[in-house]
Image (cartoon, rainbow, N blue to C red; front, side, top):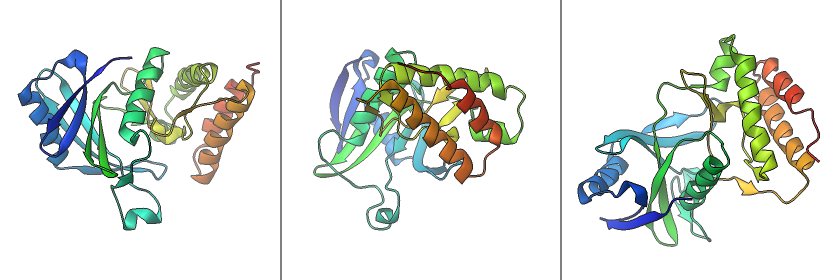
Length: 235
């Protein structure tokens, strides 16, 4: 797991992958990205995130995703979070690093930014994955590659199960595919270690995936292929 270098820029604390050895100018560019025009990105399955994308010299195209509140609470405190233990950004950065180590395809984590104290705002920095489509889009377009892409997804899920990692919110909207057909998993901010049996973990993944397909009236093939592929015992 890579180390982070920490900097204070304006009112922000930046944690950036130490392998990047960022300069003062680059650090200012990271902060500038937090003030750049942001887009409210809606997940096909109802999630929401506020993102800005920009190019930082020597680093590449970077996505800054701000952690937003969901549910009714967002009407009062849309972007503020209560600091209890690790911040959401710290946790997701570490989970993305761990996922990469076991062979999961995830956005390349670069670092994060925090502002505030007990009540804080947080952003995660990742490298942009260009020209991707979600598994939802591909299913509705009846992409002929879908069975092969589901096989690639299942290989990723098996790695998560074998490594006892519960993603918590793995559904078709959190699976992206790039133009070359490489499958990526998103949103690890709620991912946690799992202490139960591997078969129980498998069932958690199956139930979450099928619930999303049914609730959002997605093509049945998404549930059928995943259910068939995970119909094995891990014990």
